[in-house]
Length: 177
Length: 179
Image 1 (cartoon, chains in turn green, blue):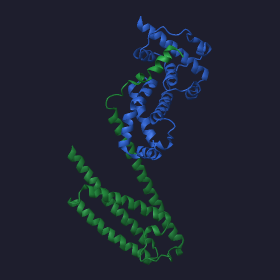
Image 2 (tube, rainbow over the protein chains, first blue to last red; image 1 turned 90 degrees about the vertical axis):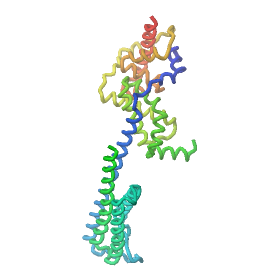
Image 3 (cartoon, rainbow over the protein chains, first blue to last red; image 1 turned 30 degrees about the vertical axis):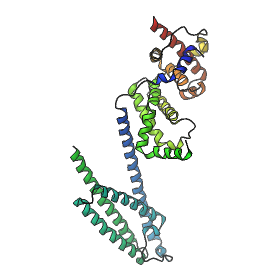
Image 4 (tube, chains in turn blue, purple; image 1 turned 135 degrees about the vertical axis):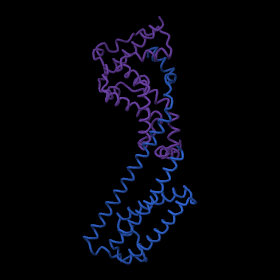
């Protein structure tokens, strides 16, 4: 080993003395946030596509298999979407998770805000309708029209939350400007 | 580190921004210096360092803990720098005739110069790009000539010759700085 190599080995840490350009941490944080946002978006798109595909499969199955609607072993007075098929169970899971997240974010905004309050009331009303639909699903023997109405109910609730979130975010941004 | 802590760290690094910025704060100096030595440009070095950290956090599942986390991220950063140079189609000056001169080009009696970090750093900046990269990978990133040759797509003998040439050139440049 030459003296040059020995010198570098001995003083190895001193060669790491360069400091990254000013503001590097902030720029990194911004990139990190952008990346996370992109990932969330693609996850959401994936689940929306999955829900749409599942809906198509169930619609096709109910047309092609007329005897499909006979939940003989169900002992309850109502059925959830998840009781029908694996695909519907995924759809139900997706919407329930998104709604739970949405409820949480609405409550963070403030229950006393009149807009939030009215949205929560509307959500409660739609939830009651959904419960009613679960009963109808059982009684109708998983009729396609009821399934469609249940998914539509989920969609309406989610849309209500997303619209309000968007509105509140926009007004917060304006405030901060 | 206990297995539970290790698993927890890996999980946090995938999703928790606070852990990510902490690890970034601890390791960025080392990673930045590795990138800078290879690329020779502060802004490119910063960009590639950022890419390396983001890549590392996304792929943290593949970190097996055989080296330290900072060393693992450094290795990712170096690969990214080398890919970047390939994409930029930098003409790396790997003078094949140096192979014939080979390690014999090294002065066996070695050094008379008084070395100091600043002068060596300055001398390294004046090396031809290909030569500088080989010197850095061998001396600072502790890669062997076989790995360097594979990474750069050159012959192992060429890597050795470049390294020997780089050492001699640094000695010459450092000596010139004293005159």
